[in-house]
Image (cartoon, rainbow, N blue to C red):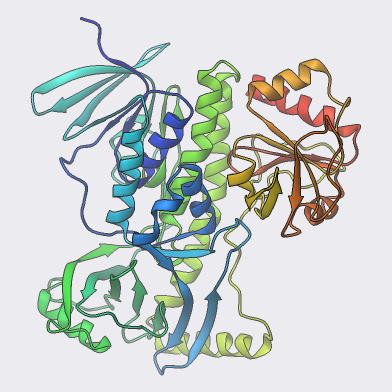
Length: 524
């Protein structure tokens, strides 16, 4: 009997595995997800994600379902052990990605919504409780041994992606090791449901107290999280006892009388990334590829970036539109990019985790001086890091390649909304001028094969285009025309993961831009 065959077999069905499943299935690939646990893990781990993750969630078709499990993060405040504010950042309105820069959420609820979305899509199979126990790669497939309730069986897939967490079986199979940046601290995590609605001011707080670094943040509607760092010399067994939990929560007036303790436990922060993300038809993503401290809320967001980067590349290779070597750009782009998130998380953690009183006093003095100097809100390093290499146009004299593509509201054919909702996602060639006649038949056919949307952008209120013109987007938020001006460009070619492939400085440069994409895709 022939073994079952799927296009992509995903090991692990947490949020990154769910996201990758959706993004692949939306593109028409068949997906089998193998999850070792019989039911979803019903406790939160991550509690926040950024605007780029929100944009990816929208691309996955779940944006309009998120209301019950998300809320605006609102504000982030760092205080020292004496209660003085060291840093205060308000998060209001939409950021550059067209969504709030930070959202607090309840992870079990989000995972349930993603699972629901995956179940709606054709070609998706989820196996629970099954565990992958063996991988054997061949020229045209990977044979995967899985152990389930009825024993072992072998399944085949064209590609396997390990989204199986920090202790990844798939990563171990790939070999290559892990680069560990040695950032380890023990934190007691307490997830709590207050019995009555209560406003917490500030909504998200880091107390940088050398005597006991601690955290109090939203974990989505109706849920809160408190975290306490184990200080040097403290006995771990005593630290993680339930008596210790309630004693520490009492610092914030949280007691068994006014709150339910959902879960508690000690975790050790890590900062590391895998040295090998791909070997032939086997790849890894999410925590299997990288782990970072939680202080910037970038763990799941980074995993979603992995999923989108990988999904569109697997799709092109699967459809025969790209050479297999295109998949090598996945690690080239994402491994370098995620180092920014890891380093930024470590920088924030270094501030928070300081337990030396003299060093903490120096930190406080520096941060207070910086706070006094700034007339605008204090800012951390941007979460929106450009790509440094990979599938990018690098023609001399043209700028923008690798930059995150912002999102504003546009109007097309009397429909107004966010660009992705109105125009669509995928490859986009956005132009300030009509490109009629600039691209030959081969270029137009290539763009069409990728599903590229060619759109001319004009100022809000501009006259309607004449008959036969390219689809026109009115720039309601004045985002796109200033962007083209900043790049000194007439056109920008955007990848499906919302990063700029490249720009063209003049109309004559547009055919070269398109040809460079074709050349790179086909050679990988």
